[in-house]
Length: 383
Image (tube, rainbow, N blue to C red; front, side):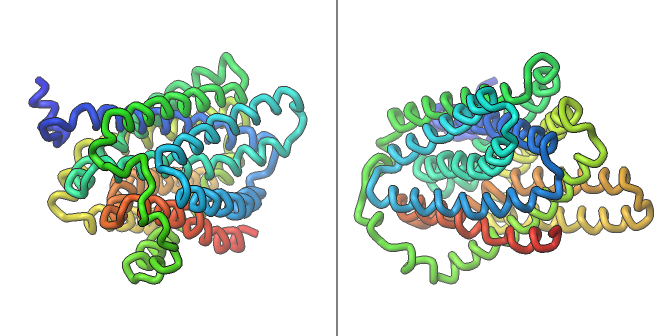
């Protein structure tokens, strides 16, 4: 049975423990993201109009790069392990602080705005902790084969959390969903410490600082290879912002903010998780082995483009609000499933050629600074 499972998951001898711990960390990170995101979006749409979402994106575009630049400076002075621990402590503390403030000042609507701004930061920062650690523990051959699999823990969390949220909101207040998010980050921190303890010998510099950490990024980002990565990331975020704005605008228009909206979002993310799980565990490893990293990068955008064209044609024949909403749901589903399952694992593999400490700073810069630039265009369009 074990051999059958190893064959199905594309595992080689000696990889089981590392992959299991990575899967668990991915799971708890995903659970935190779903519970924070559902709580934040539901509370925001209860207190504000969806048309104010562009202001959230602007605030996020100003906040996330500042955090990213501070982390880049820390990464030049501190070990990867210590920086990762600091990030996870921050991810644990902010939701806990906001949850406390919700009950101290329940009528303070600005807290829901701040929480939604924090969602983007949490997604990016938790992803950086996970993928920078993975890039240090897996070689490039393993990365091509296993990154889709280890990221599926997050997908399983989406399914489980999405199914659980509609049941929870019947019995507890929506802000209390943040307690699950806090718990997820605590478990993620414990697994990170375990990974470093068990596998530090794989990369001698996983917990140390070497001379590569002193090399300034300004001398690296001029390379054409990195410029192409920056362009790809910018376009990816641009698609995300347009689809996201449309999705939540129509959700508020057609659903009752509160329990109904929270339940819908939970079910939606659960469905996204099921699609992602199949793609990551069954398709991704075999697809990239056959087509290379380029195949993983192109599959998602190609299918999303096909879905977008189909959505436009369908809405032209039946332009009612409900039919447009169905089209937007399908488009959002395709964007999340194929980007998360095919594009993201292949994208993080692109940083494998760089030395560890340089790679950490490049991933940080790309996600926190480059990724926030495209917010200007969708914000201008909706305003």
